[in-house]
Length: 86
Image (tube, rainbow, N blue to C red; front, side, top):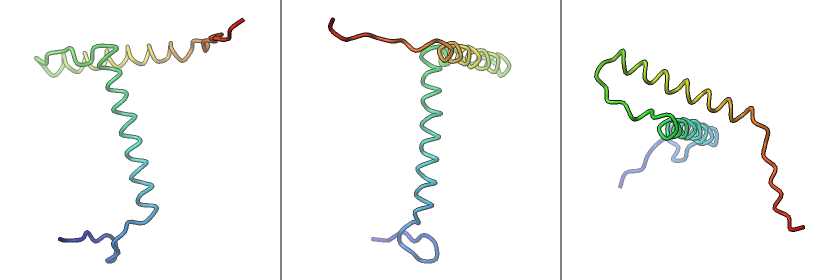
């Protein structure tokens, strides 16, 4: 079995390297969530590509619609639910 070697022959990555890896994974997760929301809410995945220009217009309009929906949701006041028993 071969062992992985990192910097200068050490066998363990540094804490800074692990922290950077976690940060990158978090950024990727946020991006994946955005695309998943776009697929479900504005039909990002409902287009059959027939040409570059048409595809680019569809993607642009779908992402604009998602941005508008997100801005509208952020502008709404938070809902207060009163679940207490009188």
